[in-house]
Amino acid sequence: MALVVLSVALMVVDARFNSLKPVRSEMGLVLMPFYWLAEVPARLWDGMTEQITSRSTLMAENEKLKAEALLMQRRLQKLAALTEQNVRLRELLNSSALVDDEVLAAELIGVDPNPYTHRILIDKGEKDGVFLGQPVLDASGLMGQVVEVMPYTARVLLLTDSTHSIPVQVNRNGLRAIASGTGNPERLELRHVADTADIKVGDLLVSSGLGQRFPSGYPVATVTEVVHDAGQPFAIVRAMPTAALNRSRYLLLVFTDQRTPEQRANDSAIAAEQAAEGPIGAATRASGSAVTGESAPTAPAAPTAAPIPATPGQSDARAPDAPSSPASEQPGSSALPAAPSGQGAR
Image (cartoon, rainbow, N blue to C red; front, side):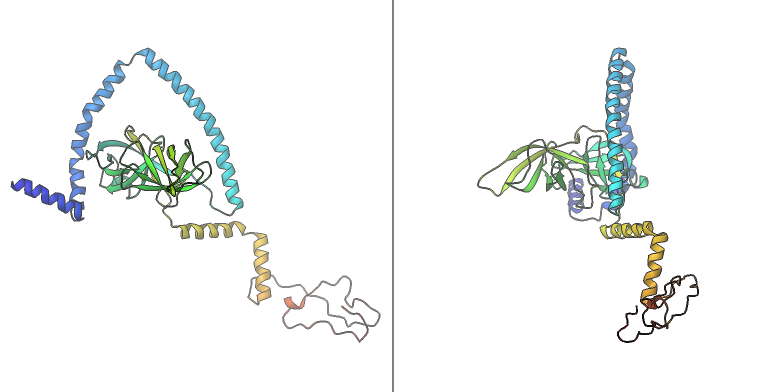
């Protein structure tokens, strides 16, 4: 009875307070060898399966992989051209160029047994640079985000958890929405989508990046059902996650740009100014400082011809070959003497 009371007390404290987080982190470090031992049977089974695989199966799989690799190479060539085009367009807009996100491969080593919570345990932790809120994806799309970090392991909250939401947009037309988990590992729901919105079955939903947590452009789900009710202002939109949430074993941790939008804007402005630096930019700044009276490191001016008074009958009192010397560029100098009345002197 004492142990039962102690267990209930610990569960209540852990659910309502954060005082047991350090203890749970240390327990994760202690239990790491047990996770490794629990994986031993699966590793042995995989090794035995590989040893007894027939030659024909291996040949068929090899041919299939060759065909898939050829298709991936074709897609990669097109994506490379599109990436370069995007970089050039962003340079024209004085914006920072897109770069590939840095990723870290991880392996799933545990699943939360609670049927009402969709969480998994991975074999990468704080020692590997994992941080809270880090996006996680598999080979097909986004899976979720890191919600708890331990020294050598981390817990990931999946997209389909009932407490999780992610901002998305329709890849076809850019329509923005919020995809929320339903507790079903194969279903997401789009909340507050107008009944007249341009969305249909088969549309691909990608991350919009507006929440500043998930990077933009990653696949999230595919629309499977759109229900229009004449008596309701919002349509019922259901989607299936593109990631294999209950089947993927190997995952990727994405290290995105942690700068705030203001910092990114300032860095882009500084980069644009540095790109504009050059002979033209220097000349522009020098002329601007001369007009405003600011001192600028310029070369000494060459001697100019003295102004010649205008005489009647002459339209230009200056020598033809004398260099021009505007009064604004020579402080203290006076303009040409005025011509007599009735004479046109410049």
